[in-house]
Each structure stands twice: as C-alpha cells, then as structure tokens.
Length: 140
Image (tube, rainbow, N blue to C red; front, side, top):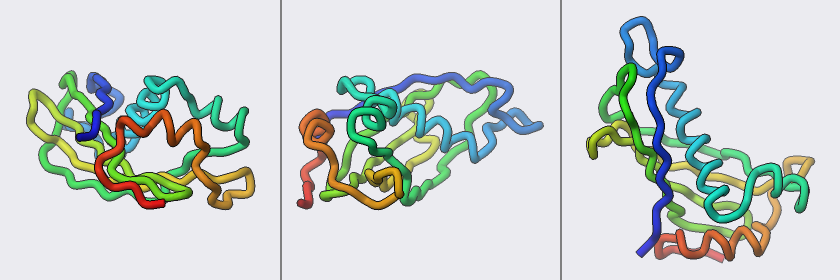
C-alpha cells in the first residue's frame, strides 16, 4: 500500500472568478504547491535538486477531471501519491477535496531534466526517499 502526502489550503479571493468560483487554472497552482510540499516532507526541495544535481522536475503532462467546483474561502486538502516510476520520471496522482468530496482528480507525469532539458535518470536519493510513497508499480 502506498503512503499519501497531504497539503491543506484555503481558497482566497484572488483564486476566484467574478462568481466566487475557483478559476480552473488555479488548480494547477494548488497541485504544484502540494508537490513542492511533498518534496519537503522527504527532506528535499526543488532548489536542493537543482543545486546538488543540476536537475529540474518538469511537468510533461497533466490530465485533470473537474468533478465539482470549489468556492471562495473553501478549505481544501490535496492528497498526492506516487503511482509509478520510470528511469527518468514518475507519475503522481493528486486529488483535491473539500469535506471528503472530490473536487478534482489529476494524473501528472513529472520528468527529471538537466539544464538542456534532456531527460535524465532520477537521482538515487530521490528514488530512495520516495520509495515508501510508491504505489505497487515501479518500472525500471
């Protein structure tokens, strides 16, 4: 069984449209924040990965299902887990919910790249730190 990362957030006025509904593009920001916090919980950061390894984690693709809207001042939780891993990338599932009601479901493909944006092997420290959070599928 995989472990999950959890990140709490609140919807602010700046996140909404004129009707007080979260503007769809802001969910991408929420997902990114949750992934950044997930790295932090395993003792890493985007800055550390860049400075120590000269690598960046980029989004190759993101598929989002918008299930329900969320509104101004809603308290949301983002649940994230690593679905699978390849030599150069990993797939993360992320769910944003309010009071256990799913708002969005996202499948994100993240790739490790060097400064020339060429895919590179996931550093061992990242692999080992993420290992407890893997779902069952690891493709090497």
